[in-house]
Image (cartoon, rainbow, N blue to C red; front, side, top):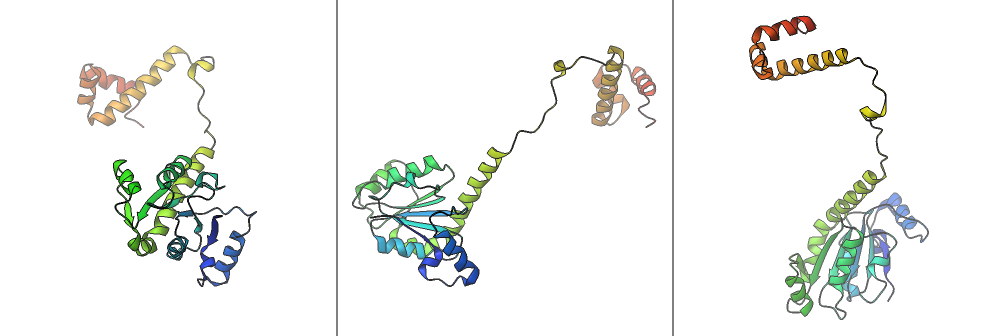
Length: 233
C-alpha cells in the first residue's frame, strides 16, 4: 500500500480560505513544504487516519499515513519531526523504523503506541528501555493536545541546527605572529602594565589590596598609578 501524504485540510476541517489554499499547495508533488512533518506508521489505516485527524489544531503540519510494508520512512524526501509508530502489527518493524527516523533526524520525536501490551514487539521495546508507549485507545485524545507541540518543537530544533550549520564563520583576528611587530618593547610593556593595574584596581577595590595582589609596596603602586595617569581619567 502506498503512503498517503495529507495536509490537515484533507480531513475536511474548516481552515478558512488561506488555510485551504496552503493545503492545496502542499498537496502538489513538486512543492517542498518547509514546516513540521508527521509520519504515522500503522497497519490499521482507519486508526491511523483517526490519529491524523487528531492533529487538526495545526494547519501547517503535514501528515503522512503509511503502513510498515510500504516505502521505508528513511526514503521520504523530507525528514519527519514527529514519528508515530504502532507496535504489535503484522510486520514487526516499528522499532527499526523508529531507529531509522532518529538516525535521519536526531531531533525527531518518536512515539510508540499499541493495543496489545503482551505483544513480542512491546516486550522488545521495553527491553530496549523504551518507556513512552501510549495505549492505542488513548492515543487520539493525547495527540490532540500534544501532537502539534511535539512536531513543531522538533521542527524548530531541526531548523535551528540547520541555521547554525549554514551560518558562515565570523572573521577572526590574525594571530600575533602573522604580522610584523611594529610596537616598541617599552611601549608594549607600559600598555600591559597599565591594563594590568587597571584590572587589579577594579578587582581589588583599593590601592592597598591591588598592591598586595601585585606583590609590590603600597607606595610603589601609588607611584605607578600616578605616572600612568590612571587616577586622572
